[in-house]
Length: 378
Ligand SMILES: [Fe+2]
Image (cartoon, rainbow, N blue to C red; front, top):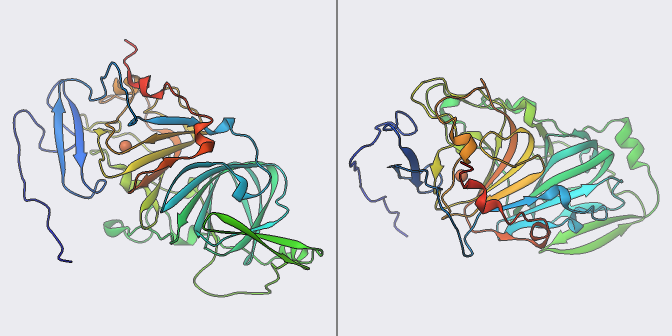
């Protein structure tokens, strides 16, 4: 099919800034309306009032918040963990486990990302052994056999790239070693502890998930019995503390600047502590925006979540596309002047190109008052 071009609009009317996110006309609030996340054409409108100044909000389009801390521990298989959000390209679960996985797991549905929210322990997989701790991303290529053995009670945000892969974003002008050096990606080791694990006799079951259903292959030995490997594909580990975010002193960068992993129909971004902008005219908080093409999910991992009220670690917010959002009233007061030098937040953002459905797990722990959290407390 022929490829189109965006409609050739280059307009400006009334009071406006010429530079997005900076030098707003006095007393105005900027709202960005954009195509394809922050990569397509966009418009910046300057409003007299915060664009989230509703006094009531009814109907099925609404922002959601879920306290995932309140979910129960499932039996120790990732395939029993409650589904939080899902669509054809993406499945997010929240999984608590405090005991070792008895069975191995294998995801035949897609590449898997495990974000370790709390806890510490060890990952055993086809390729060897990797220790994990809070803040780690563990990337598991589709089909890898693996199990976790927690040393501390562990909770995990699992993010499946259904029927496809994870890749890394092109770092463009920043060069290939920005954000995190590829050398920071750790791969499993076939060390003595792995060999001891390999030698564990007895029946080993592998829970294979395919099209959402679990099949079980049982082996009379531990099938993690490879004695070596080489190649360009393996599980990797990256801790959020090893991400060095790009910032600008003069311009509030869009969330896409914090992209960590890409899939075909969604991206995973990581917000880590970073200095606030110092230019007097630059806004210092997320701008109001529609982001009409993406459903936005934020999982709050640790720290002080500077743009949101009443949000604590372990909670998740879900802003479906079409819902205008931006900072909460308390944060908005600091739009141009912050009282701290830097943010102190760790959060994982999942931006999905297709609408997401809320799973039973999330429905059970929903905060129904979340839509009211933008109301000005006065
Ligand atoms: Fe957003």
